[in-house]
Image (cartoon, rainbow, N blue to C red; front, side, top):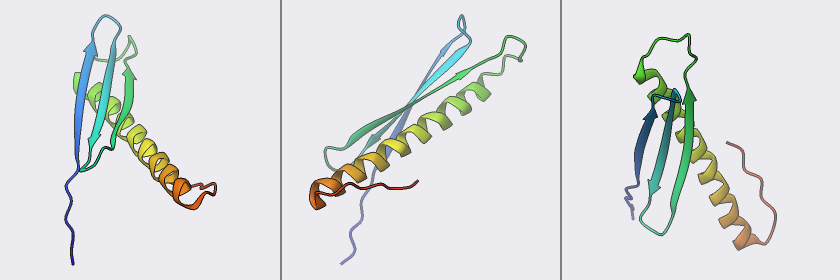
Amino acid sequence: MIASKRWSVEIHIDENDAERTTHAEARLHTNDDTHLIGRGTARRNPKDSDIAEIGDELAVARALSDLAHELIQAAASDIEQITHEHVRLHS
């Protein structure tokens, strides 16, 4: 039997021109009650050109990296609840 599942990641990006920052959230939605959020920030040096896409890319990459870490921690926690032993997973 083959089971097919679909998870989705929603990306939210907020730019603050006054602070020269971009914040991103990557929100994971699964078929169960797992809803994890990864967050990332990019800061623009005052000497850098104003190219919003670069800040978006950096902030989103960092949010996705944080989300991956959160997901690994969730898996480790789930394994620990079943085995009653400490688990250390590597990314």
